Length: 265
Image (tube, rainbow, N blue to C red; front, side, top):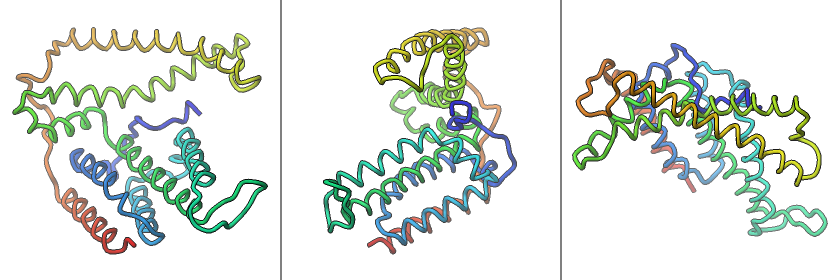
């Protein structure tokens, strides 16, 4: 599962989504996080699902590959589904399992909230899969440029965010290597009582923290050796430019938002 984790990874490509300006993709993701809450019925959620499926097609990503890479998140989505299903007691009872009742509104909210979570994860994952960490940093810095007037460290913040995203798959790979090394020494992570499983995590966390601090130190040393002194006085090698496809993407987002507003209950 660790090896298949795709959040934070970048997959090179020449699709329409890959070629979009990083600022367009960032604005779309931020806007999508807001408008996904406008959906509150079957029609609006169906519209969101179709739109996200269209994005996957345009990005030329394999749906099976995406689902396999998001399995760790799917476990959390399934947990959210059952949490809403069994603890929401609004509406009529539609099914009973012993002393546990499943209510109509509970089932509805379980489906809608889980689907909302699922769509958000898909869209944010597509952002990292189709955008390099460098262009993502440039896009974030460009969007937050007005904050420089109040002496806000825009460049440093954008760099930290992009490095954090880039290190997610790196840490996952490191965790997988440590787990395999510990399993080769007889440590059991998937069997035995819960108490023993929790104890087995300790020899996993300590080398992971040591490795993380070592990587951070090596990265800091490499940046200092290359003369990095923050964003003050830096020039840009890559210049971001809006293209016609970015305008079309913005229009598509506006149409989606309008339809959600018109079709919501």
